[in-house]
Image 1 (tube, rainbow, N blue to C red):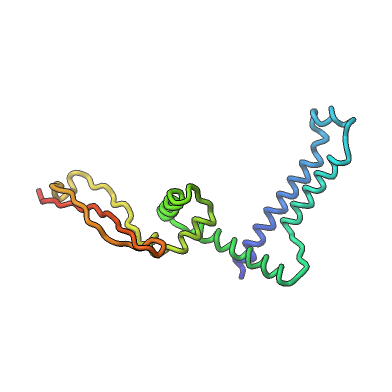
Image 2: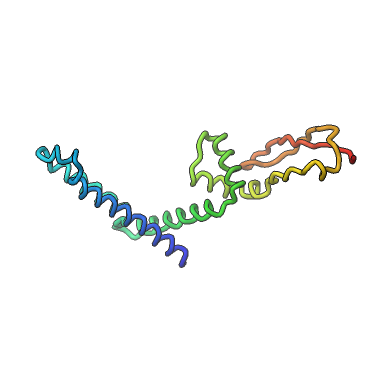
Length: 174
């Protein structure tokens, strides 16, 4: 519960900062040299644009709800956003690289939510992928590679069987 409140406090803190910046920009435009050239032609519509922008930012930061269902829906969205952020932050770099590569190859793009959804759907696959073995120095090798062959195995990706080509090497001791 405390983590949820921390996340909500961070969210609200960021929104207040955005509102403060927007308000500062709206007020400080009068001090800009190019703005003073147009002060004779100042229109009420320009003033209402900045007020409208500030109101829109405020409504995003602190939405108003008329029904209980709307408030519960908003809370569920905030919780889901927090969960997505948590999973994304905790994801190891190699797993993030693998998931993002799959999404870019499949869809042509990837965003934070799609990366987390793909990872959640196939975490058993991504968590069990082999990591790259460190390169051995020449004096640590036990033998020389005399042949390379390939074997095929069937894996499941997104619930569909996929044939995967696996490289194998035969070696002999020196």
